[in-house]
Length: 153
View (cartoon, helix red, strand yellow):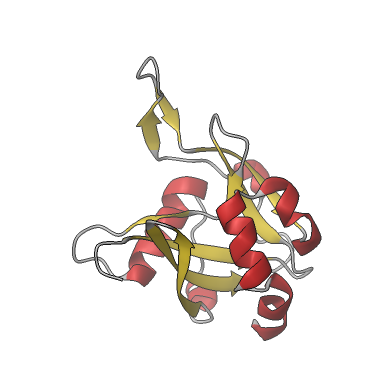
């Protein structure tokens, strides 16, 4: 496992078992909010920082008490994911207020663009239509959203 990149992220489910996905700017796919830890940063802290940077969502201390460490998963040939999960109440996350504060240079002209540019709740049955192949495969084979939904408070 050494030498592999690790992205840390948060899987947010609503009361209906739908997962929050963010649209990766100028791509065709949607993803969970995630990213690499800074030096010395714990996976949990990195996941929560990425959540804020990519969505603007700040979880309440009450929610943080229920944040579940799902562990580390093989994601792609060169990358693993360390995921955490939490359920939010209806209306607790307003997708219209989500905003990405993390920017990167656009391939081609270098214009700075946000990493994420749209947000949606996606039912487990529809994840394949939106998520990247790697994320869809993870949810199909290793991390069942239905089982996760059953296990969260």
